[in-house]
Length: 234
Image (tube, rainbow, N blue to C red; front, side, top):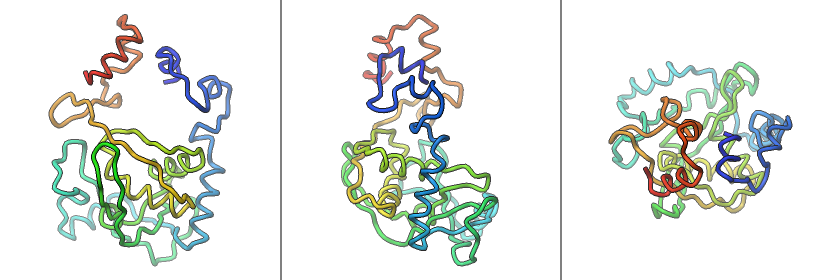
C-alpha cells in the first residue's frame, strides 16, 4: 500500500509513507494500543463498558431463536454488499463480566436515533441499539475492532471528512454516537460513494483476489491511467 501511494504520487497530509517505513508510527493502528486503552478509560468512567464472553455461534443461535432470519438488514435495502449484520442481544450487559483479556469488550448502545446528513445520500436516521446492539470494541483475542479504532483515530487526529464506500453507511450512526461518548462535540462529515461491482451482487475486493494497483502497475499501466479509470468507475 505504501508503494502504491508513492507510485501514484499521493502524499498524506500527516504520517507520510516514510514515517511508516521508519518503524513505530502513530498512524499505524497496531502501534496505538496506549491510545485505544485511554479511550476505553473514558468510556469505562461513564459505566458504559463491560466484558462479554458470548461466542459468535451463541449470538447467531440467539438471533435464530428470536426468529430473526436476516438480523440487521435496514430499510428494506437489498443485500448487495455482503451478509446482513448480526445484532447482539446484549446478553452480557448486566452479568458483570470483567474488562480483561479473554473477554470481548462492549459499549452500551441505548435506544435512540442518530440523525445526520450524508454528503451524497442525504438525510439519514439510524438507531444503533436496533441495528447492532451493544457495540464490540475489542474481541476476545485482544484485537481492536474497526468500529472502535476509526472513531478514536478520527477524533484524535482531527479528521473532519470521511469518504468511504456505501457499504459502510449503516455504521455511521453508531460511530457518531461512539465519538460523542468519547468527547467529540462535532461529528465528522461523511460521504458514502457507490462501489465498483464485479457482478450485480458482489463488490470488488482484494481479499477475493481482485486486481490491485500493484497488478496494474506490473501490466504496464501508468499512474495517470489508473487515476483516469478510477474517476470513470471502471
